Length: 352
Ligand code: ATP
Ligand code: MG
Image 1 (tube, rainbow, N blue to C red):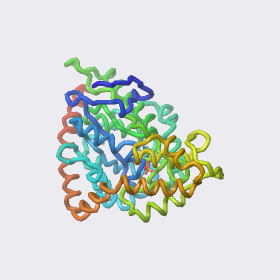
Image 2: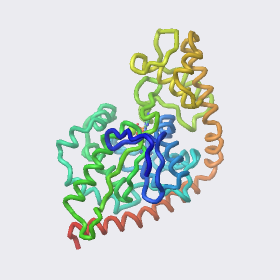
Image 3: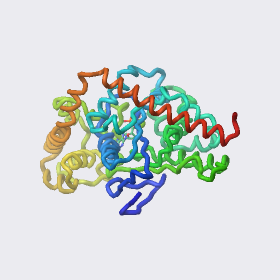
Image 4: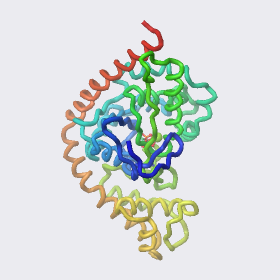
């Protein structure tokens, strides 16, 4: 693998803008929870990068993390529909099921079994400290925190390591989880050395985009569950309505200053990403036009940018059976790999 800029941060993070994968050695795992339709945060945060990596010829696995839906809610609402809709968004964005293995982790038993040895490798104190888990607890719809919420990052380590992925395109909120996956891999390899020499698991690293934390219309992280997102599949009118309701501030002059003006800057950045231009340039162009002009620019930019994706999405949506077939084929491929990894894990652990 080659990086032109060697800015590695937490979780060994590299930034995709400066990253070229090596199809000979790199393997990618990414995914999402089927909690609702994908939004612009996903698109600019990870989805575009996935497509870019696919085009670089890297082997790719995309997990629909269906068990993880019940970390922060009592029931997984409309699970089958949300799962198929995720696949729809993936395909519309350009993921190719012939090249990318798209599967739901509940359909891959051996992947989930990795959770048992992995859980023994992290302490309760470590799980307790995870800032993303704390943040998700704060936004949870449950009155009490359940055990699956705490073990979420370890389950995610199983998602990543079952296929021995070494690259994980994610948003910034996932960096603490990636750190757990790296710890699990390292400790497993130390505790269970492979007599053949090669350690069982690679050290996975995060791959951040140049928009690792896109803000929603309320100025907080754009999230499916927080009612602050523009869905990729939204209509142009829905997009206009959502953007119009976005929070701004009292200063009429539009500027790009993420620290002092998070809400306005989030909108400016969104227009900039859609137009592939610098946010400062967009802000200067709007100048004294105020929030109304900013919102018009954002709406037009988003609708323009997503038009081809939305057209493909509408076509693909007519064939739900195809979406289910993609998941079935993906699960078959993922199961073969997970079975082999679990056999190797049991062997180095001395299980018979
Ligand atoms: P939920 O609210 O149900 O947790 P979500 O919107 O946070 O949904 P996830 O399925 O949890 O979406 O996240 C999937 C991937 O998308 C992760 O890699 C995450 O980092 C990335 N992602 C989610 N929201 C954003 C965002 N606002 N900006 C950048 N990346 C994001
Ligand atoms: Mg989330």
